Amino acid sequence: MDAILNFLPYVGWVLLAIMILVFIHELGHFLFAKLFKMKVEKFSVGFPPKIIGKKVGETEYVIGLTPLGGYVKIAGMVDESMDTEFMEAEPQPYEFRAKPVWQRILVITGGVLFNFILAAIIFITLKAGYGEAYDPAVGAVVVSEQSVAHEMGLRTGDMISAVNGKPVDVLEGLGGMEELLLADPLIIDVDRKGELLRLEGPRDIMTKLNESGGSFGIDFDPAIVGFVGVNTPAEEKGLLPGDRITNVGDSTITFFSEIPLALQATEGEEFVLRFVRPDSISQAVGGGAVRLPDSLQTIGGVGYEVTMAANLSSGQYLMGITQLIRLKDYGLGEAIISGTADTWTNTRMVAASLKRIFVGQDSFRQNIGGPVMIAKVTKEAADMGAPFFWNIVAMLSITLAIINILPIPALDGGHLVFLIYEGIVRKEPSLKIRMALQQVGMMILLAFMVFVIFNDLLKL
Image 1 (cartoon, rainbow, N blue to C red):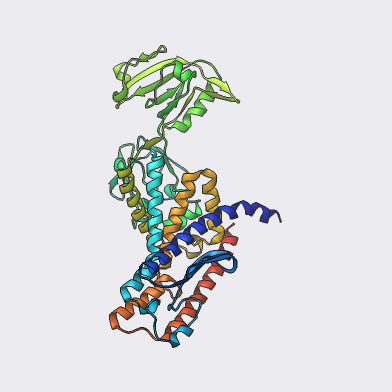
Image 2 (cartoon, one colour):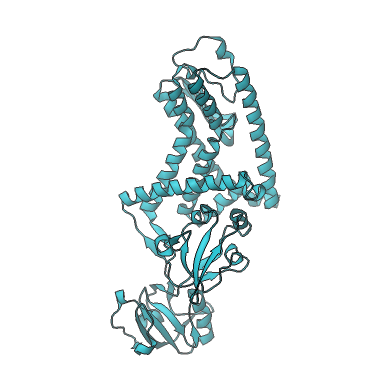
């Protein structure tokens, strides 16, 4: 009972995501059918049994109790309902079968097209509304042990110079997960204390990423000040965003994560803080800061030192700074270009991931997720905030589109194969063959659904 109650918060978010995706997908079929003056008998979000329905004109609009999909029933179309009685009569002008092949192809692929459009709209809106946060490709990286990065040879302190041949300053850090999955193999060039190394990722990197919780295991963690709090020791001593901390007392600082430990070691006593101010913001500083001799200068700015003491707050010694997080703002035009590019890149990433699975390069069981895992990921994203939730919806929309276009009977891709065949040979495939393949396709999908649900439960 506790497990069921704990799972309930996940249900609402995943239902919202699925309903959005299904509605948009079926809307694509519906609008193209209407565009070509086909009779749409039913527009259903969710499968039977019916919860509520209302007929408007020639179409009944329905919400079904089973929220794992939906359908648009078009007159004169052989679909998953296996209804073929209409085939005994002459085709009517408003029927699907009476329309040119190219129109039927657009109707069949309309759902997939709308899923891609939805993903693009989400990515564009997120870029325009929230911008894009990224880690600055400054300084060395922190590498977690028991991670994919550590396994392939990366170590804390390495300076990454390129990923898959692209300089990190172009990638604005390591880049997204797509940079890890689109290359086969993954190649990372690093500078380790003057020694240039080229490291190659594992062939089954997607499986290993899933086993490690989706994290590659590195972080750009430069000790750069991102924000200075009001009325804090850092503000009183004149620190500014962009300053890079090099020493806290006797501790040499390379990574921002080292600063809290160094502050605790001061135990509230005065200590000498050294920092480097970039040339771009270099100016005289107050608070008793002293410019360091040229012999102690660090490349990339002017070095200063100041004597200060940390404040005690909730058992922690703090000086009032937070880490630098860079945020790139986008105008509408830039957001459209970047959001569209994100849609294309993520489409390639999902397609590449599926290819890895189907050719056996990565584990099928470890990398396929069903409703339970989708619910878990969607809830976790929703807990992190609206941008994360909508990003997951966009990724699910792309995944739904790609899966639907696979040439499997009972999916849009299966119908598309029949139509392409008809367009080439100028003759419809045998109804008997179509019905048999539809049934096979339905059995494959049912077996797949049962498998992924049990697989999800085993991975919890």
